[in-house]
Image 1 (cartoon, rainbow, N blue to C red):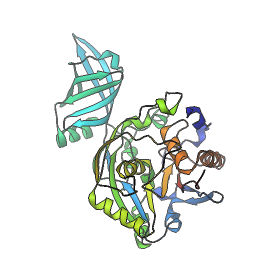
Image 2 (cartoon, one colour):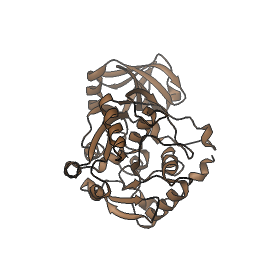
Image 3 (cartoon, rainbow, N blue to C red):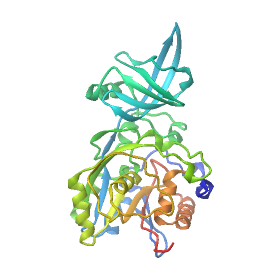
Image 4 (cartoon, rainbow, N blue to C red):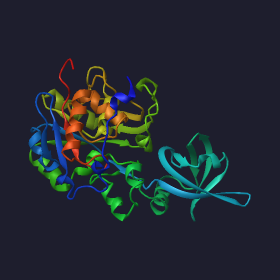
Length: 351
């Protein structure tokens, strides 16, 4: 399918540079399959669901994975900017590097007084770093010398500050490993989670460590030629059994964010049963895909020509989503990571 079929114009004024406050005050565009769009707020979410339905959250925690270092070679120094995106061993990360051409395998980059890394592999702008710290000690060093890697469309317009370390983290984050936030989850507050529980709506957690590859543009002209980035995830046996029980009794499974959706669709079998699962996924969902694991999706508004806009177009229908985005732009909805949200129901059979 042509990538330009997923293009649209977005005014700069619709790009959010800060989140709503409180988080659940963000707007929520409800996109049903059978009637017009409805304008709600995230705090109204409990009234959009039924007792016995289940929300699936991604509990990954964002690491301060953007680093600035120095490479010395025969007395000549070069500045190195790296964004970690995939951990491959306790002491090893793959990273996207600005100025990767200046680096060679075997060289060492110093990121702080106690943190350096040897370059063990290099492919284009992607570099593999073996650090001198490992596991928790490496995470602590990253917390000291790294910063939260805000998406380019925010970082290009303002400086990262202390507020972002809290704003760009879900209130339920617990499993460190992501370098980008599962942004649909940023809208949830403790009070909203409590209200959902009071209404009998279940919450379950999976883990997908979102990588910086989520920000990479689609450079191919046709979707079949795009190579998707890999991300590590896990669905526990307990969560898989609970979600299968939800659907068996006739309730709905609602993915909070495309990361939860992609992980569940990686873990489901042909019969629609979610399986315990652990590993890396590079699932790429475009129109024509048959969804088996979820019944609805809560997600933010995505970039034009992005794999995520392709995903939501597959779920609710490309014409429906083009119309939804046109409506959101006209109504002043805020887009991208710090923006407003939507609740999508699947397209009708045959669309």
